[in-house]
Length: 168
Image (tube, rainbow, N blue to C red):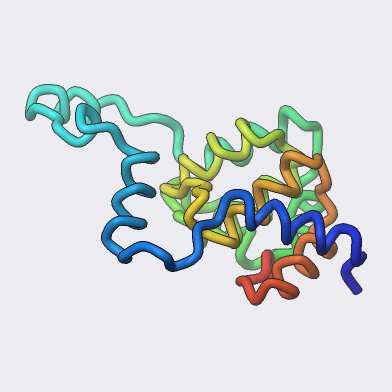
């Protein structure tokens, strides 16, 4: 069972960052999107786009295995700490363009014990971001800031706040 003290800390952390539906959806969503994108990022000229497409960054899978090697972890250790099965991990390993679900990407960042900035970079490789517009994201951010990488405790907190769980 989730420690009552931790539950209250997470609850106050959510209250600090999560705006309940007091404003119209469009206003809330636009505020979230403004946080993620600036107008200059949304206007890309064709030659710039072609240049960017010809030099892609490393994929999520490539970045994941780079981190596994850097942290000197075994693959087995990593997928067990992430609470995901071997079959899914094998898919990620064999397909360099594999795009995991957000919960899987977060679980792997937790298994690697990345700091918040490193986790955000890894999630970005999978096409995700952590936002203050989502309780799930706020809870995950809380655990990264606390450097608490216990996936079972994190799942207890997510469950307590009716959020999607990490791993399988």
